[in-house]
Image (tube, rainbow, N blue to C red; front, side, top):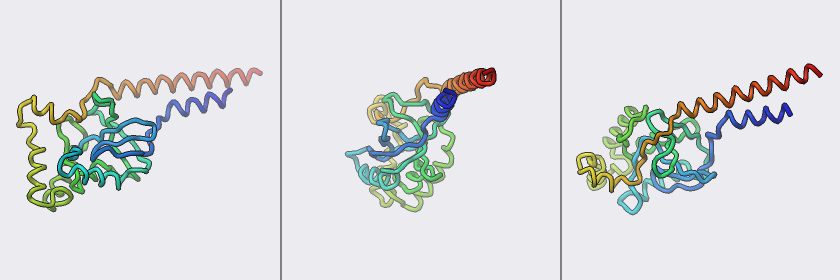
Length: 202
């Protein structure tokens, strides 16, 4: 019984943050083996059926599809967006894949919501633009991305229409989640303590 509770506590207290990517949807969204969709924090890639959408998708596929990645949240974002997608940094072998997409020129920095790596991402975007990397490589490409960057200057209604697939912060609080795990952990240790005392009395 004691070993069963120990194993149960282990599963409860250590969330499965590392999962395999089964399918890439576009340059900033993908699907995990458990069926969850992930919207990568801090970036905005060209949408599918638009110029460079396929290029961004194929680049992300080459980086993570079929591989096991680590997922990390950010205090500046909720747990999920209004479409139910997990908002996460994507880490592969210690590398931030969102940052890699920006550095390689296949995504721009998405600044609508705060995130702790914003400055690092912006510096990488500048370098990619200066070196004409990825979709920045050419006048036509540059103009297309410039239009994306000036969305904030458009009327609010148009912005809502064009960014319908972008993440929205939810009321889910990471601190609340951590507190839940802490409470579960305390309960597990109390149960293990009770079992230990009973075994000694025998």
